[in-house]
Amino acid sequence: MTFGYPLALVLLLPTLPLALWALRRQDRARRARLHDFGQPGLLARASTLPPERLTAIRQALTLAGLSLVLVAAARPQFGDRPASLAHTGRDLLVLLDLSRSMNAADGDLPRLALAKNAALQALASSPGDRVGLVVFGGSAFLQLPLTGNHAAFQRYLDAASTDDLANPATDLSRALAAAATAFEHEGERGFQSVLLLSDGESVEGDVGPPLKRLREAEVPVFAVGIGSSEGSPVPADSTQAPERWHRDHIGRIVQSRIEEGDLRRAASETNGVYLRWTPAVGAELGVELEKLEKRTMSSRTSPERADRFQWPLGLAITMLVMEPLLGAAQRRRRK
Figure (cartoon, rainbow, N blue to C red):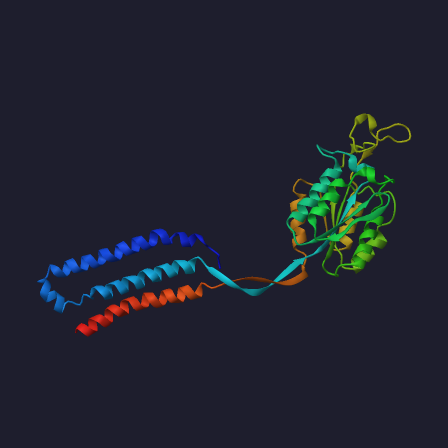
């Protein structure tokens, strides 16, 4: 046997002695009042005061009833009953831009770090979702298939670097096509979505065809644009060393600026949402994702302890009702 609220049992220790003291004090007070009205011999014959044995029985019923009330409050549990556990959620595929321009820092952190933080914040409000990871630059590939293991997703996300891809350019069309292909092989239509994290500097490909595939599959794209309109220098690698800034063919430092056109298009053509990066974008994404319908990912039956508080509570009520009835019966007999 277990108890759902065992702290209630601790109250038995002070409650029973206090209740016994109160009952005995009440009995002594009643006897004293009766003695004030006449001789003890007459009172013994005429009084409705119950005899010692009946008094003890009534006190025992009161104490037992109070004890059982506290036992019921502790929620005794024993025996098993089947309980159905349903796991609901959605499928979210994160498209992470690993092109060279994601090394640029428009503030204190590189764009890639901001993108990773936004993804993790968005997922924090949806622990039941399956999540996968597509990394892309000039090419794209599925780094992590859809999984309910968010810790594994975070490991892959943390390890992603702009040094991972041989082609440092950006092709949003390949990333969107990879997402469409991934959803064609698993998941259920109507419960899938894409989170696209990029500065939007797509220099290759046409996003039209993959967006059509996603739209027909009812997959909304939630796009987050990361970067500034003023532009920032692009490090040649992830070291952020000024002497290693990327330069064009005549030696000028390359300035990377956010390009929102394809990002906005991806969101609008798939009934998704476009957001410009801010420190609160992760929370905003979480709100938008929560608007999507969830499906039952899995369902299983698991035994759980059954509450049995009704038994001691029923006995307690019976005893507390019997106590005044005994007194009434005794008074009727004396009359």
